[in-house]
Image 1 (cartoon, rainbow, N blue to C red):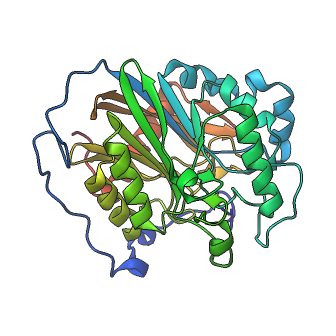
Image 2: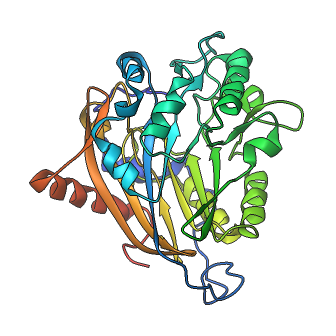
Length: 353
């Protein structure tokens, strides 16, 4: 994502009109079977597990110094991340110390020690499918792929070719096999061809190629108990999802996705249930150098999952200071939670299954 709008800029209610995408099909569908949309059979009982998701994370500018102490680099939110059975964020940076900046407004990079810090914070997997994943060109991309291979750290949404970029990461948590896929719906127009993974060259998993992403979800559906899709999508500073986001979410739920989360807007968007599945349209910034005002609103989304069924969803609101997130307590937490719940009004989602 590019921080094209000054941090803290107020967003008017008219931003949610979605007129620019008025021709997109509506978000509507009916479950086909009792277990939910696309359920192949009645689900076997699974021990509940907790999943924690947070937003845009990098180690740029003043945050680079935090890598000197990787065990504490993500600050006071580490206990909440480690407390979940599974945790994930969007890693919004190239992993390289070389390369040439791509022709865009903001370029982020970090050394491979970023993976050490993320692992120390209890984060199980990250997505690099975003509009900063190839910020330092083909050299930076090669470095990122090499660092991923050397570290063995789980990263989705990027690869040496399309098959690898769209490939799910599988992890079994207390008997539940998760499939996790990452993709981006946001790429600069002049960079789409060079950044998108194809059969011929390395790059990112692009959600602009919806059929390819849908295929990946369908294949994962047949291999896992629950399918998670982490997307980079939306419009900067806009607190309501675009019609194209709703349309893609509709398609992915039809294909078998159980949890769809994402970010890019620099501010939180609403989350809720959709025909038995859970969608969060945007978790805002997390560990992010330039957060202030509205862009400092952050949080951790915690879901309780039993098989494919999301039993409970909780937004743990926080704020970012000096680029570092911390969770709120007391009256501030209650007020922030209330504001977050109000964001659901323009999503078409419900508070309960």
